[in-house]
Image 1 (cartoon, rainbow, N blue to C red):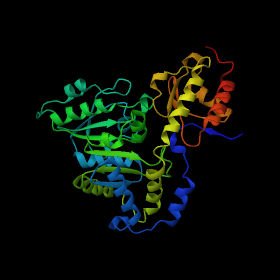
Image 2: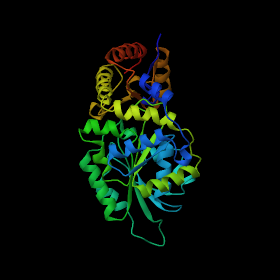
Image 3: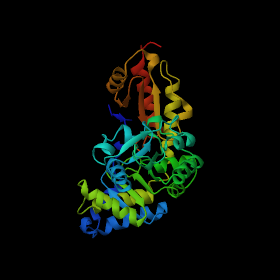
Image 4: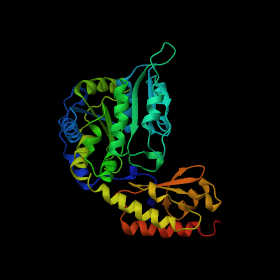
Length: 347
């Protein structure tokens, strides 16, 4: 039985075109800024998002961390959602490595309220850390891949500007957000000082994330990347796949949104499982399994027994993420297996 892996879009494998590009990539030493393929990727990313420069990093977590370090120093304050990836999933790097003080501002289904953000920005005082940075996230992972509308994004950036804060956007899945919102990704990039996007999720690269910003900011971020061990040598083998991703893989993300909707509709018809269909805006499906009477671990185990892999979101949810390896037929098979796995669970 073939396994249907719905844990994350990080499970994607590189395309044949990516493998060929990696094999044939022109290489140099990136620490000396001499890798031509890295230079090509960074120029392409900067141009695509309307920024002056870009920086290739090994992961999204690294990319976010070097941006935090480049924007602010130890003891400075960063405003962010406690459900954001930076706060929730990045091992406390903003505090333990960057030395920053988080000021949590909870979101509402993944959307920050500009008024609440503004009220959280305290006046300069000898008693408080100095607020330096507002972090945004789009799509918003823990709300189910929700899209922050461009108008709200712009309003949040305007709040930060009024108070002299820089803005960083964790855009790990920014291209999903842009496609769902029907706007260019550069429209989101225009209002921020730095932006990170991942190559290794729905874009199907084996690894890598890219930071974009001004030339001056990227120079600082490059220095921070080196400080945390992120200097690379013949990194063109990574960058080559990224070039293919940016040239060939963005528009097809809409297919993942369609299969996620198909999956969500099918699951919502199964006894004991609930999906808020309004939350399924991109390629994620959050499922409330509380009606089954099973623990999250039990649900995950049942699904694994029938060859469906999902992520845990205890105490009452699982997450399923679609990507390029899932067409409509695969989703139909996944639904049949989920139905079989959940037979006998109580409502």
